[in-house]
Image (cartoon, rainbow, N blue to C red; front, side, top):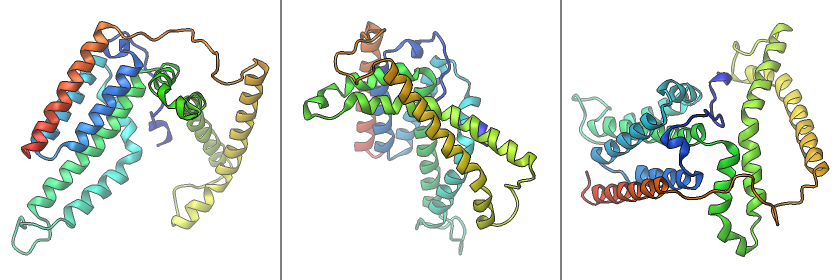
Length: 265
């Protein structure tokens, strides 16, 4: 299960989506999320599905990678579907049944919303390196520096978090394998017993995480790192014509989503 977590991974490529400026992709993902939560009818959700399918086809990333990353969220998705299915009032599908047609429709919509929300975020991280994502987010949030907010430090922490997610997952898997070799059992017993069985994993994982953070801080200090003031970038971000075209398509997509919302379709 741990190996199925793909958040933070980057798949290098030379596709149209990979070549977009990270600021453009951040804005487009924001537009997609707004449109997704704006959708009320089936046409609105169909528009979001078509947009995601088109971006996925342009990125040339297999759907298997998205579905693999969704495996740890299966419980949440199923629970959301069941709650909406059994607790939505309306017309029963059969006389005396608690399941209603409105509940089925609402359950499908909520599942679609969760799937598209998560997979849209995956598409951003799959096609954008953590460094480029950090630079783009910092440039977008630059106006907030006038409010004395530590934008550079915030984006740096986000970049480090994304960078070390795969590392922590790999280390957790290695610790679990070592504990299983010593006779540990993580899959049998009740919830309390399973929680207690995780303690031998959490303690060495936390210790190694603090050690890694200390080593990283020492390495940054030895390289005279003093924050974002006066720092330059190896790669300067510049919006190209393809970025402006993508933003125009995103604006049209959002406008269409609001129109569909207005008419309830």
